Image (cartoon, rainbow, N blue to C red; front, side, top):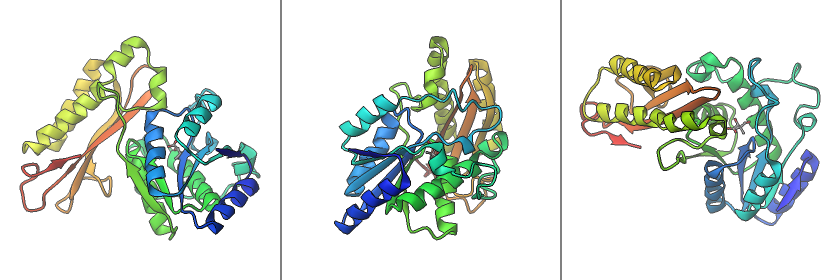
Length: 295
Ligand code: PAF
């Protein structure tokens, strides 16, 4: 595995790989890698000849109250994991490399609407930071394929839309959320949970799954389901930001055109704010739910 920290070095290596006829898959990360990230890397390996992984803790996607400095950084362990997975190129740019003129005058990539709802309401500017850094990384790496986790479903939707709107010739591939045995979605933030919070945390997925099952069984009062789910989370010790049943394509209210539901949750549990989602395909010829297929 070769590690580069400047754009020039990285682009030279990628040019050589291209000249040798290799296809390139890209997995952008902020490090502190867990099995969920490694699933993305494995998918990338199956899809292309060369896998490029970036580790860059992007200051532009952290809000005022969010502690950028406290974000967990584990570079040596990350390197070992990527090496063991057979990654060929690791890119670890500095902040100056990505934002040579600082953040204040940086051109921004905004994806309206999709970025304004759900997590976008509680974290203003967050998705502009994500879309901006991902588009910069895409322009630096110029991959054929880029891989993202479905756990950050809103982020994945925003990146798909950005690529479409800006005519970026990159295939975006989503990978199913990796979970602990008790259902908790893998996340760097799980490391902040105390032992007692960790015991409560799987409730998040439990409540999502119950909601999906209720809809699959034909229950179609979504508002009631959302309120009920929020109450359950509060009783368990969470502080929910939202629990929403949405159209998986638009991330807006479900309409008659909706083909797939996304049930999304964000809730604080002690220090960390956890997110998770499940989806449910709707059969257009059936009543909602009766012939729906859970993801
Ligand atoms: O999902 C993440 O880790 C980050 O948001 C990403 C996509 C690497 C951009 O900084």
